[in-house]
Length: 442
Image (cartoon, rainbow, N blue to C red; front, side, top):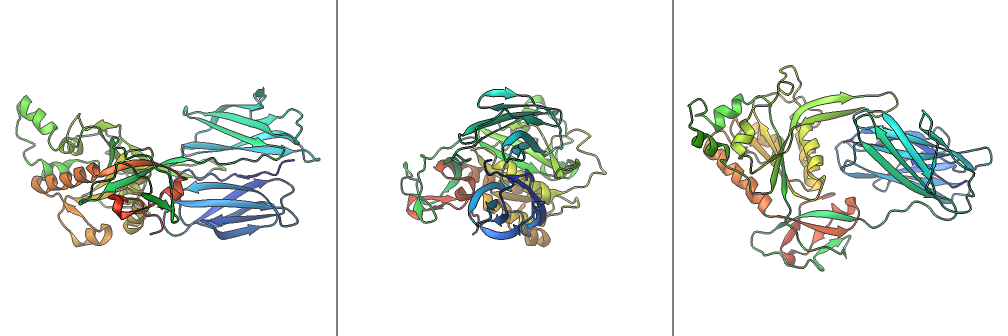
């Protein structure tokens, strides 16, 4: 029987604090060490293989690792997952189940879905041949000679239409492995320097140079968190809203303060929907709007246009700070320039997270945060959020938009040969004229 250690707990959303972690391991395993960012978090010696792990007080990208040992203290397997970075809405594990002789006779699929959707069907293949999957998503395996490696592949379709796939190799001397990844790194050009055309020797990880592609300037994504009700926004940013406008004037206003071409704008509303299912990790999902292109309209039009009544429910709890953290995760999903904008008004914030912790998270993952205040430069906002732009009138709003535009214009992407966590710790030679925006661990 190949040694297998599998996470049953799959953390697809943002987490912090103490969380239950469950694993399934092969019978030959006698000890499991659980580590968070390389530090011991728990040691398990008997089934059930579960523990409550402390991920720290604040949300931060971390690596969760489980290491399996046999009776002689030899390491025989390990599993890992990165938390608090973008992950698909659903994932699953392939768990091999042995008979009394230790030979795998079935494979069980254990899944997690951030919206608590259930799987509708699944397929499993062994060495390219389909095997029957029952209603409990368990597959009976053919007789296997585990002295040789075998490829187990599965696909799981969920009721919301999402399809997850997984592949693993087990048997012989072959074990699952992680290939070198190409990861996008967000860099900003320094004001008094011109970035080098080639980044050879410019970027380092743990003091050693890393291979990096030439700088790219892809499209930008701006995610905005604001109060859904537009009354305060209209009063501050468009005081002449009630005056009738000609068609040409209305079109001019619509495109006022547009961001550069190639920029996409989207809302992450400060309203969460709770999803729970027995045996699965509960999650809160924040409602998002559709994408809007900068060519469709400017920031004035984008911020003051009305949205549907579902978003405007006056009884909904507003969680602005929590929504900013979610916007940060969405911003790093993909290789693009990015920014998150929080528009503060008079609405109360009922978030779980604290502003300082969320600011730290966005800084760690390299997402510029702009905080705009409709109610002026209040001291309490500065104490919570740091630098705050006053947008209480149209002229000040224009200055804030120009700052946002300048930040996006200074950003570039380079692809490096690294895993996502190492990419967040990249350093740059100051002579190269660029600075990494991610500051994990700094």
